[in-house]
Image 1 (spheres, rainbow, N blue to C red):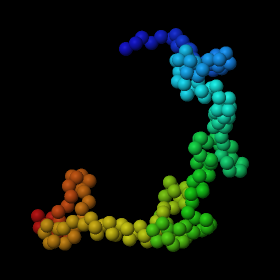
Image 2 (cartoon, one colour):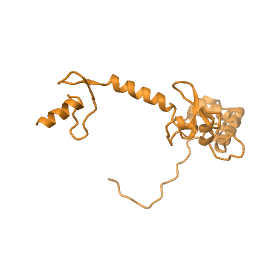
Image 3 (cartoon, rainbow, N blue to C red):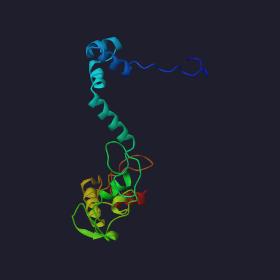
Length: 184
């Protein structure tokens, strides 16, 4: 392991001096010659020698540093690839344009807010889930019937949910299990 010292790291000397490259170009040197002399790519030298490209790049860099949310009265700074801040983006994604109703994504019906289960993470839907309570109940019932096992004693349906303590899945329905416990 290297020894820790309090000495400051030496400043990195720039590999490519733009002003020197422009001076060499004014004196008649070509872009490949300048690139070879300074140890950089020809494309990099060409970009620096092309005044329009240099100015465009500088303007873009300054714009990205000072970019703020496009909505009125919001001065929140944002990233390069967006136009609004997160809260305004979430508000724009809302599927409800009405004050007291929300559209269910499953049945496509507009229903009152109370018909949807609460979910604090869904800020764009006023804290409500995407499916209404009735669609959720239908989906859960279908899931339950699709994932039912068969009781080894009576052949009826039984749960396939694992036991939390043992980690085993049941092999008997609730009625057969309770009857077996009573006889034992």
